[in-house]
Image (cartoon, rainbow, N blue to C red; front, side, top):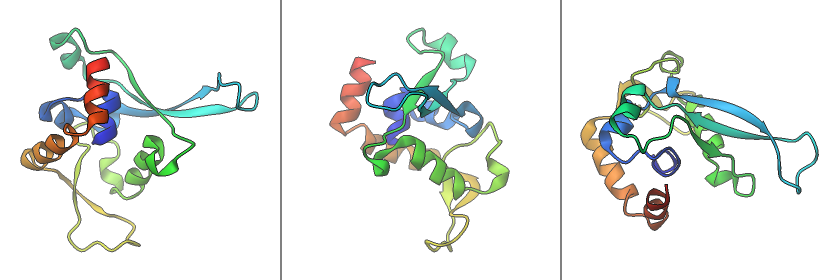
Length: 145
């Protein structure tokens, strides 16, 4: 939720509730950085917001990106997204009506699936978003977008 708020400019619970697996795509771009070897590619996540949201708010972009963080893999949005996907049930990965899932009750760290097919409640998302919005880094990102 932190990276989705920061990079995808999702500021309301309703926007987060509209997010789905089908709105996020993994892409590769040729690296323009001089520090990387020629032909090296960067991995990024692209978010294509629902068209209804674009019409309602002209400040919204048609595409948002989250770049990989090679220096700190534990804070890399691409790796965290891939890990999240690896712990979700296969049946939800193509859905266009859910992204944030309820944790499984009887889950242990080495379980293949950590999440149910049920969406998180609006109340849970509201609490999480409230906490995320208190982070200075988020406030700066939202003010400069």
